[in-house]
Image 1: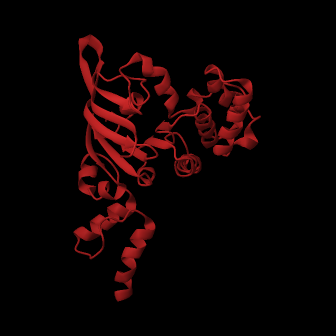
Image 2: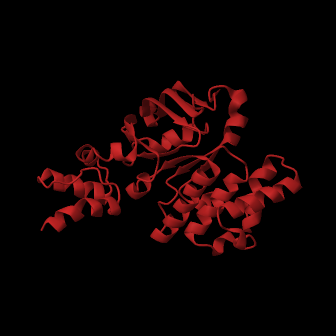
Image 3: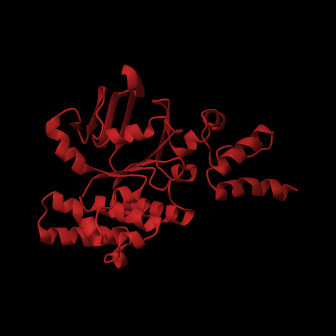
Length: 283
């Protein structure tokens, strides 16, 4: 049996609102994520996907249900330290995570707070900067970096704490296309080369399609869970939820609905081109 990074068991979360009202942000979510897996979580704004992300390293605790991180329940206070070392978080705005005036000092901040010996801190900083391709910028001020570079520094700061999993909450939402590509290349390298478990909260479908699995959250509930090909076959259901689908999936679906004999589950431009070429050659 493959070991689990996360075992989410009937998790619900209710926020206290003004005037004593309550808002259920998550409702009875059950989900497992294997170690080394790359899972994308998608949903419209307010769907609960970021709330779910914050449960994964116990920034929020379930109102009902339980969530196990490598077998450790988030409901047991004695597990908090270990859980937060196992799971690192990267947020949407890198400026909110960068605390030092020099890149290498920022990356060293987390290990210093963990009480890691200075020699080991230096090793961790060197390795983390190398893993995200930012070694050449170690003496730079973060303020002088591009958005994509800042986010890679934020990721390095998490990596220096030696987590088993990294949870990224819309890390490319504030970046231009070049910055998004930088960050996603870094994240995929960590997953493929280092075997790190990755949870990616995103509203960019071209990012979600590159994951091993996709979980779809709607109004606080898990409504779909499967491979990108399985999820993006449901074009009409996803668009009814207010979600986009990758252009190749949308186009192949529309062509199929018009009676054109083309596969309806194209995920990439290459797959769509391969599906259309035989039709063009017939002419």
